[in-house]
Image: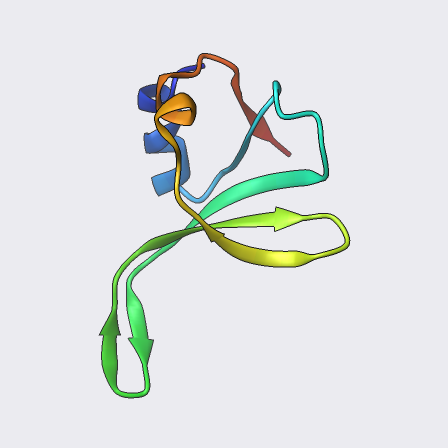
Length: 73
């Protein structure tokens, strides 16, 4: 799937990953708007990496143009 195809799935709360990564990456998820310390928090992507936990994820140009995105159960 393309990033354009998976973006609505991310917005619906599904987890995705690129099949071409083949590393410790488990999935990417979209965290919706919220609040932190009384201030607005904009939506952001998190990636779950085995053995490391969560970190913020910013897709690269290669990620945006890739066609190997898949849904993770």
